[in-house]
Image 1: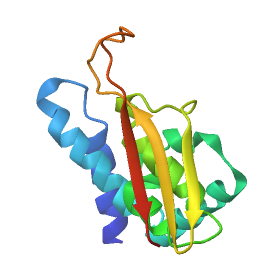
Image 2: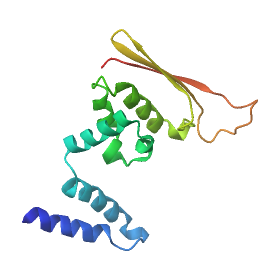
Image 3: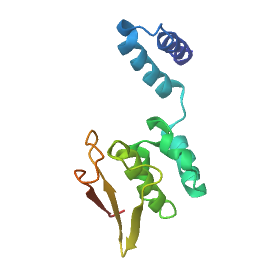
Image 4: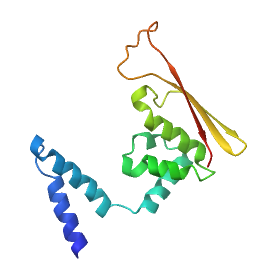
Length: 143
């Protein structure tokens, strides 16, 4: 009915030519298309949870509506995936700061919490070994 028509119109807007004047409309239309025609929040969470359980490495590159901070934060309450969810959340949040899939993130379970430590650098700072400052990130999570 009306939702199908709305989804069709949004799809048309999302496929406008890639010129600067259409960019804001295309971006908004694409986001709304994902909301209107996409999976429910719970379906997306269950897909993410299954990927975290299986150790899927490509979760780092999934779009935000499939593995964004809100979904990952909710996964922190699920004991069987909370360590992996915290790791992915840190990697996604700090990827511009030099935390890649190959960076070391130490996560320890402490009584009722998780503690994560990692190193990062500020983007745009030259990688000269003498001048580069490396920062220590620490997160304490109480699920």
